[in-house]
Length: 419
Ligand code: LLP
Image (tube, rainbow, N blue to C red; front, side):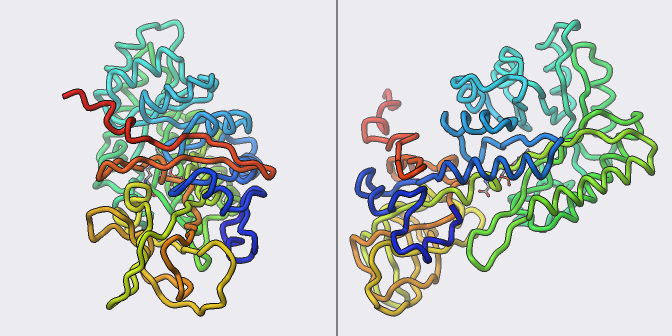
């Protein structure tokens, strides 16, 4: 699926299933996910980066089916908690293709990763090296570790998504010498094997330049240790949320970064490391569309179109000022378009899905609205704010729709309340 046929395809089908049919069968709000599109993006990434590795960042969206698709498509999986790992494990995702991340891994996270035997653990602090080595224990089978380095590159994205700069919580600073210190600590632990370095510049990055700079800096740093086998450049590739935007083209990215690494390695006289990238959003965002029903329409200084979901299923506008497009689904009425602000049902003025978007002037309660490009960081960041139940995830493929995650019930909501 591309996200924009919503306006071009009169049946408004995704994966061969009309969206109206999905809304009737599963109710609203509902997250719809196009399986073929996810698989297609996985293949595109693998092809563009061959022979290097692609690890899907599970934080963008994870459920059992998604873990299976990623496995079947031969990607690695990046997890950042014992919870994400448990989900991967529940479908037998191969341990050797899992990477564990986290700036604050708990003893449970580390123990679960060691027990399952994940392929790489990305170390994020000096203290973690000692904790991990103590837990790993066995010197005969050292655990492969990457050290997360802060390359000091500004990705020019929303502050909450910028992680390559010095003044944020992730990674070990190159500039201050902290990265070198932690690399030496890992080398000094017989229970750990240093496989290489990791960095993640941030998210929704539209240009490859920052990746090139970071790759060069990390290769130069590696050269100080005679070169290392692996370089993981993280994720963060931008996608187009709306028709006037463009994402980061994976072929351009791969070409530029591979060339920069090769050149820097030649200059430094070290062998080229194998590369890993960790896209989350770029794999799954455009495969998703959220459907809502209009609950109320209020005309005043602005037209507010109130839907039956909101910031509990899409917190991104409130968190990052993210902007979306909205389309009415169903037969056209011939009414002209007028600007409207689509808002949710939560008790906050900031509960906005899309401000000032064009919608048919006769939009009314009961209408079905679709918000494209909601496959990443929607289901995974959904909450129960106002005790609202989270929507189901429905996969579509070849004209069939099937539930992947069921809708939360009111019983689910009160089940954990034991007071
Ligand atoms: N690798 C690491 C170490 C990460 O921290 C992340 C995202 C990724 C890969 C994947 O980044 P992606 O390719 O999906 O941009 N919740 C936010 C974005 C924060 C992502 C945090 N880490 C959002 O809704 O946009």
